[in-house]
Length: 523
Image (cartoon, rainbow, N blue to C red):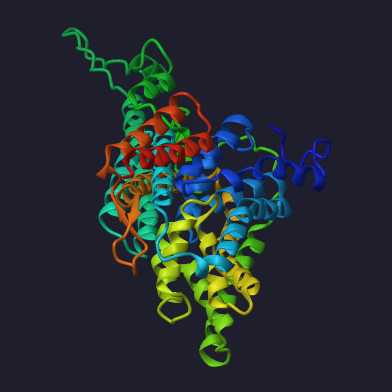
């Protein structure tokens, strides 16, 4: 891969933007199924095929996105483009990724009031087929990432616990708490293992270099002279006798467990002498061996990154104060509401929907029926679920629909992107440190566990059917209500995982399967 800073291989801004258009342009039209499903496409495109980043960087960026507010898929795609081409290509990637779905929701916002109270049954069957295929893609993502992230027992436990807690409980504070506990857990475990191994090394070194005093020579009865003292054995000779057949280095290495993953940050032993042991006890923040970096044009310093993050927090506080004291207009209140939602939401789109309802329906800005219809439609559209903010903006400001759509989109997406841009320089600078690797290993494991919980949640509400109550446009039930939906899910997984069927084709197959189900079951 191209090394950063190589002037001979640096590409122009036009070339980088053209590259982003080439790869990100189709994503805006084919990114169905939600964030966990679309991670499969990103990994196959930018890690496996194009090799823009390596697997370690990909899982780290995904874990960081899961630990920060905002849509994890959009943040991951934005971060890849940011590291690859710089800020302007990354901004272009965001527009390409969100644009098609946002435009569709803008149009739906204009026409939602003309839609009848109940949708045709075939539409619900289509949505159910899309959801079934999306679950299959999410299982592919969880399966593939698990094989990369789970390297030893502690990460297996982290995946299990994060999946269990996020499946059984749902709260705003749960996701960040799980990420923090996972990162600190692997860091503490690695520190304990390193301390234990160093104690073992110290013990072996003390035993191997101990001076052996020979027994006193037996005096002859006819001699009154003291026995001639035997010179102390040379420590090196004793060590070589203690560890026959190989050097101390090799024997100690054989006695200690072999680490499976160099990204764990565990101490790598070089030799058993005291000098090396003292060297190994240097600060946890000593960087590990340098890793080759791909071509990157993101040059923001750590200080500037912190300035961006702090500036955003100050802007948020100022906006809240102005809304409470001076500016009470609906447009500004809507902007601040979505800005707050984008800041405190962890876990992506499915988590933000209830909060958006309370911020728009409860004040009387959006009709409950229109809100539910919009939610049903956006699940069948490509792109992030946060595009729902465009639809809400049109309804909140009916006399200025385009302004409302723009305010909603910017307010909901801005927090996650601003915080991610601010933290990426810190990640880039500290990613090679052992302590950072230990923490990221825990974040990665917890993030994979959250994907497994997303599988469960989507299965619970994947089957959409019309409601008999005119006030409720749709009823959400579990996919296992009909074996056909489970079959679509399993077929999608097998096709994508073992037959390399592209994700868009699998999503289209799910839609066809849903329509086929309607054709067979209609009366």
